Amino acid sequence: MESAPVVSRRPDLLRFLPERLFRPERPLTYVLVAWLLALIPSLGLSALASHLVEAGGPTFPPVGPGLLLFMLVVFAPVVETLIMGCVLLILDKLFGFLPAILLSSLGWGIAHSLQAPAWGLVIWWPFLIFSTVFMVWKQRNLALAFLLPMLVHGLQNLGPALMLVTGNG
Image (cartoon, rainbow, N blue to C red; front, side, top):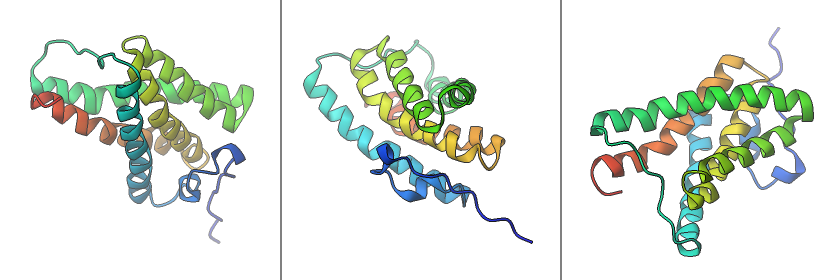
């Protein structure tokens, strides 16, 4: 007997997000959808932030292009997702599904603002998506709950990382 698919109830406050984001199925398609949901609005927020706040983006250590690419596309998404996931598990126990997502995205926005204020204005949105991905997939499989946000985050960082290593960023 086949079990019914897990579907998270989409909170009213997140009704603007597509229902697909709340269905933990077809992981590769899900990653593509989540990445586009993280990327496109963050590009708009980035343009808006650059007009509102006259501040540069983050600075990175002087390392070779290969190492910088690895740091931004692999290392940071893995480490940040491990931290995010553990914090989300605690926040979910304390406050529930929606508050966990909102507190996580707010916290990551603040954390990234410490290095560059405008960056925090942009970062909260992708972390809203990454946190939602984690919370939705943890209901189905905890390993995928960690892996899928890592993949989405890595894709999110790929474009800016390539711009930085090619000197266009």
